[in-house]
Image (cartoon, rainbow, N blue to C red; front, side, top):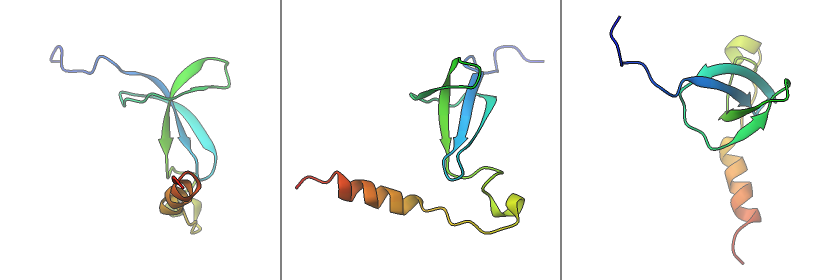
Amino acid sequence: MKKNIHPKNYRTVVFKDFSCDYAFLSKSTADTKETIVWEDGKEYPLIKLEISNMSHPFYTGRMQFVDTAGRIDKFNKKYAKK
């Protein structure tokens, strides 16, 4: 196996699907500034997901509308400078 080709920042992170409030612990090299306290009481980096296997129609067998653009519009209206 080749040396020095693997990422150095491979760590345990929490992936959270906010469309169905589902979270799981895995490993990743993705950068993130946010953290979350997991069920074991430890703090882990948080990676936000829009769709996971718990909300995707292929896995759930039903269609679920995920409104990401609407959330941004609501935020901009709420915090727009008046």
